[in-house]
Length: 468
Image (cartoon, rainbow, N blue to C red; front, side, top):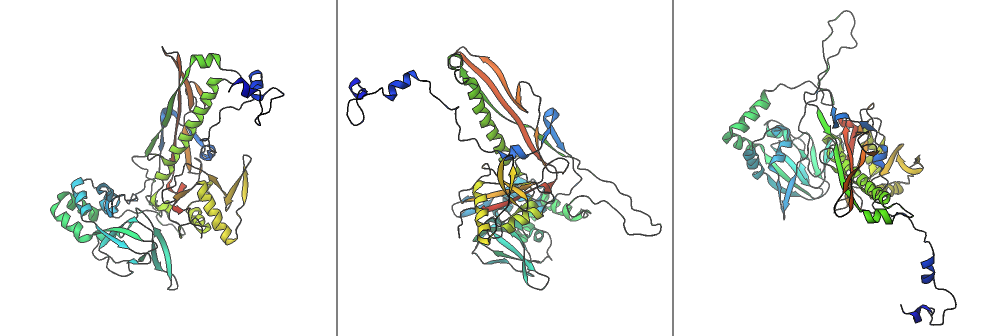
């Protein structure tokens, strides 16, 4: 800007007083600390009870349970063609722990792709069951007969689910329920005849199937745990049963994960530009905030210990009508005792609010650390933007019980590490380089553990884009 321009107003008249641009050269500005849009409420980090883990490993000892193949099946899609990943067939109880990759690839090739429109019947009650269904995409309801002869929904299946697995080894089994497509469904079917043909040419598969038929059924309780023999309601002097409580031989161990970065600051900046704000402190503050955001993201999404990937199959529910309704959250609560909190993406909370509005319901709120948090049945619903939203605008809602004493979900960390500034978070000076750059190693250690399966539940495939 020229001198002539500085002495004139915006309207072109001669300026009669000192301009603001010149005055700022003699004034001390009032400034904020550096701002950061990535910072969120991080309610999961706040609400999880944290357990001190010495040695970096936490072992969860449980009562012995008998696993029955309770995972999800994964598919790959090429154009209109859908194929099951061969190794994923090991999620079926019949093929659990079977590791012959060539045989699994042959079985995967024999799977037949079928398409069903919404409202179509996939299987009918009472008909012979001779194939297993792998649901690649869509939602289907399992329909049974109610106590008065009417139809009742026994459950809902969605992407990755399977049903009818017993048909692969029992030639006399029938469908004890019907399955109806709620949406358009893409399924893969594997027939018992194909399994038997492959077994005729494969010694490993034939031996595996024979071993399944020869293993006696184990006595278990309703949760799949080894039964404890008891006697009750007796009189006189009967011989009481003897028993013991068996434990898992190979309990799961959680190793602390780590998020790290190296913060670099030039000595010239640290020496000369520390007024009125300390540059090193501000750089460190923003770096720590970013690490905590990553920590919460990992606690939700990490495949090894993240909550979304460590929920048991029978604790994963599907919304009855796609949208997150009060009925769905009631069902989620009914699967566990002492639920402490819900976690949901803010858009999912908004979608739940719309469903409440349709029914004329007003969820109560509770004060948590000065924040008004919506609740359902007295359980707070905390926002968490780390829960992913898919391209099809579906997400998940997490419900959990927390704490070691309650056999719930706990966070894991190790307080007291060297150069600690917060529990399990340290900043270590790494030296000054020949380029006069100061380096600090910033590290945080963490993990999460689900002590018993029913401590954690997930409502999956929640639609957040429907406004009707």
